[in-house]
Image 1 (cartoon, rainbow, N blue to C red):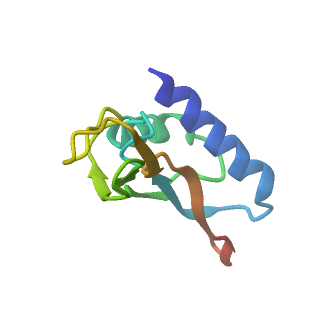
Image 2 (image 1 turned 60 degrees about the vertical axis):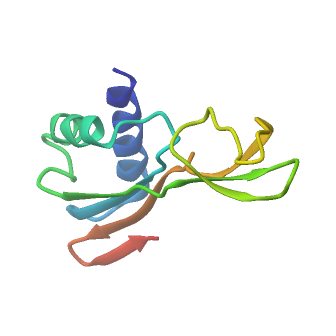
Length: 115
């Protein structure tokens, strides 16, 4: 499960950046096409934050939809997965969104540190 390693890296990055004693909320953006399973990240989060400044923090995950553009007809598409074919029949689809994996916000006991 690569989500464990990803979640550990996210927690480590937050711990490196935050000097406050307690993080109350972490908001992540995990795109639908990122290959990362949000429910697995939630499960792993509870494991890796134990005993850290994030212990007890709320984890919010935003999952933007996949979006693309057909390079042949310039039509915009909603992508459910990376293998897409445009309505015009072209498989030449550029992925524009949905691969995101980033920390959007970190709230600490005294306020918001990053967004």
